[in-house]
Amino acid sequence: MLEIFQYSFMIRAFIAGLVIGSIAPLLGNFLVMRRYSLIADTLAHVALAGVAIGLLVGVYPLIPAIIITVITSVVVERLRTDMRISGETVLAMFLPAGLSIALVLISFANGVNVNLFGYLFGSISTVTQTDLWLILGLGTITISVIALLYKQLLYASFDYESARISGIPVRMVNTILIILTAVIVSLAIRVVGVLLVGALMVIPVVTATRIGKSFKHTVILSIGFALLSVITGLFLAYYINLPAGAAIVLSSLFLFGLIAILPKGRGTAS
Amino acid sequence: MKDGALIQINDLSFSYNQNLALERINLNIKRGDFVGIIGPNGSGKTTLLKIMLGLLKPQSGSVLLFGQKISELNEWHKIGYVPQKVTSLEVRFPVTVEEVVSMGRTGQSRFFFAFNRVDKGAIDEALKVVGMENYKHRLITELSGGQQQRVFIARALASKPELLILDEPTVGVDLEAQSKFYELLKELNQTFRLTLVLVSHDIDVIASEVKTLACLNRSLVYHGTPKEFIKEDYLKRLYGKDVRFILHGH
Image 1: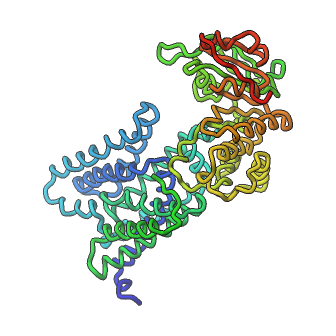
Image 2: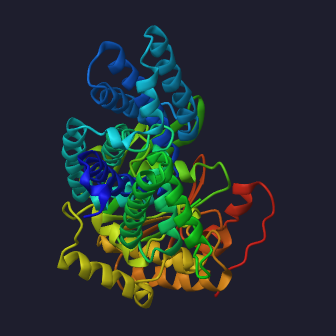
Image 3: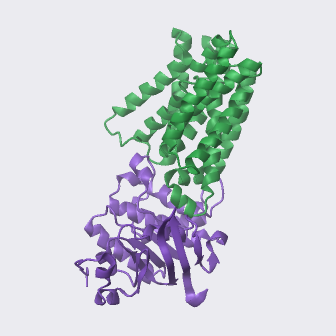
C-alpha cells in the first residue's frame, strides 16, 4: 500500500475530497449555465461568518456555517427575484458582508485566528470523523435531490421563462438549487477553504464545456476533472508538502489549460 | 368555451406603474386560427403575450385560456411557447438538440433522469415535424439561427400542444430560413390543426402569412383579415405615416 494511505487522516482527506469533488461540479454545471458562478464564492464568505460564530460560542463550526449560509442563500434568491436586484449586484453585496461579519466576530475573541486560517484556505488533513459523517450524509441527500430534479433543474437553468410557462415550479426549483449549493459550499470549505470553494465548483465545469458532447456528458466530465484534481492535489500536498486546497485548485486549472490548448476545443462557457 | 375560442380576452387593461400599456382589449382567438399580433414598438404586444402566458397578472378585465382562468389552468402542456431568444445560448454550454427538445416533456414527465417511451416518441416525432431529426445529437450552439428556431418549435411541439405562441420568432434568422419557417408554421396550422399566435413587429411579412391580424397600439386598433387591413389603410393609421407595404409570396 502507498505510504499516503497508511494514515487515517489522509484516508479521511481522500473520502472528504472525493465526495465534495463529485458534488461541487455537479451543482456547478447548473450555476455556470445560468451565469451564476459567483454564488459559490459569496456563500463561502457567508459561511465564514457562520464558522466565526461557531468558534466564538464554542460549538461545532460547520453547523452554524450551514444554517447561516442556507438562510442567506434564500434571502439572495428573494432579493434577486422579488426586488429585481441583479444577481451580480446581490452577490457583490453579500460577499463583503459575510467577510465583514466574520472579521467583527473574530475581533471579539482572541486566539481563534489560527483556527480560522484553516477555514480560509482549507485544511483537508484535519478533517475529523464528525466532518466526514456530515459530508457523507448531506452529500447523499444532495445527490438524491439532484437526481430527482435533474430534468427540472436543466430546463430552469437553460430557459427560465419557458420552463415557467410549461408549468415547472421554477421558483421552488431555483430555491432548492441554491440551498443545496449553500450546504455543499459550507462543507467544501473544510476541503479547499473559503477562498477556493468557487474554483472547485466552476473550473472543472468550464473545462468540461470545452469538450462536452451533451449536457449529461459535460456533467460526467466535470466530475471526472474535479476528482482528478482532488487526487492530484492531495498527492502533491502529501509528497511535496503543498497546501492541499491550493494544490487541488491549481491541478484543476492545469487540466483546464491542457484541454484549452487541445486543437478541437469547442466554445467555452463564459 | 365560447364559439370554440381558445383564448378569450375581455376588457383587459394593464399598466406599468402609472403608464397604461394595454387599454380595454377585447379579443377572441378561435381554435384553428393563425393570428399575427402586430404593432409598433411599445404598443403592448409583449405585455399582451406575457399576460396570455400567465407571466403578468392583468389589473382589470379577464383572460380565459381553454375556457379557464389562467390562475386555475393546470394543463400548461396544451400551450407551446417559442421564445424570441434563449439567453443561455450565449453562454455556449454544450446541450444537444435532443436535450433541448426533451425539455418540452419535462413539465409532464416524472422526476429522475430518464424519459419514458411516450416521452421519447414525442421528442422524435417533434424533431421529424420540423425536419431536424438528423441533428438530434448535435449541439444547439453549433446550429444556425434558423435551425435553432426549428429546434425551439420542436421543443414546444414535444408537449403535444393545441396552441402555439411565438414571440418574434424570426429575429436574427436569415431571409431564406424565414420563408421556410413560415412554411412550417402554415403546415402546423393546416395539417396538424394547431392554433398559432405569432407576435411580431415585422408587419409586412406576417401580414402575408397569417389568417387573422390583430393590431395593437395600446388598444386593439384592428382585428380581421390581412386583406381588409391593407385595403382600409390601417397601417398608416397605426404608424401615423406612410409605410410601404409588400406582400411576400403572393
